[in-house]
View (cartoon, rainbow, N blue to C red):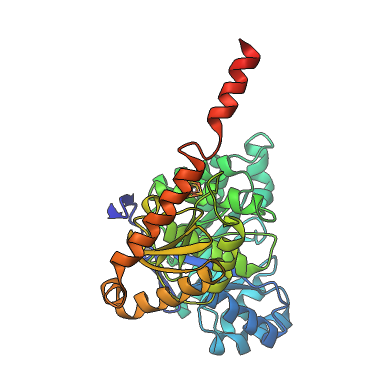
Length: 408
Ligand code: SF4
């Protein structure tokens, strides 16, 4: 076991997908899949670049026709990240994708069923040193397994499918294997991966298949993948969303960063949920800040807080934050008041300070300003708000009074 971010990670074997290690204690990687026709290599490459920018470490492209394999031959040399070819029913497409130079194959045991075909592909991949993901999918289990388990898709059936496939590969001394046992049911996929992790040490690719459009798809994927990661299971992940695949890559990256399993790359924006004390439209300002930071690689935690009464204290661990009060924005750095700006300049000030802190550090940024003066101004607006709203800004006291009157 290896401990990372307080999580005991199960140690697996390592395979190399191009120059990206998967398993064996390597950082957990994010995958996504293009939705363009692979034959259209320019459009596909553009999408691969977009996905890489959004946080994808590895990208999969479908290889469903000869033209797709030819497209891959043009894509692979120009791609910024390793490419996995998704093979559907024709084993010949796997051979064509290998010829195109892909860095990994994904085979679905439910689709390519003839043992001699699987062995042919495995032998060719072995000679080229290319790994294969065995991608078991709850929706396309082999009919025999389906029947064996009473016409139901069970975790046991999915694990058996993966183990059967491994045996074909081992027949030709092929062990550059990753495995996935995806299902659209979150409890089922969690159980299948849990069982699989007990019987094999090949690296595991996690995902909830056909999770659907956001927000439900995001929630299902996060629940399934996050639960397994928290148990130390999983070496590479993919969100399967019915959405622009850039969202998949962003979500995968965000999950790993939130769990402390990958270093933060972009701003982690936190914001209060807003309440009766809020002096600004927190939702609108937070959205504006999200958009302003979207493409900036600034690995800081930035807070948007609705009021200066509680905001700076509640977000004192953030690297930087802003809280509204008396139509002004009170900017604070690691809980220390730093500056006062106009309310309509709050987001601009956040960006400016984030860049400064990122480039020069928090202490150097604070040394440029009069923190005492900023604190006095914040105290003034805080006292004014408390005097106006009292301790009960959400007016719970009045409501409780009314409830008592109705019920007495
Ligand atoms: S008290 Fe202030 S910081 Fe806390 S939720 Fe309400 S507005 Fe936001």
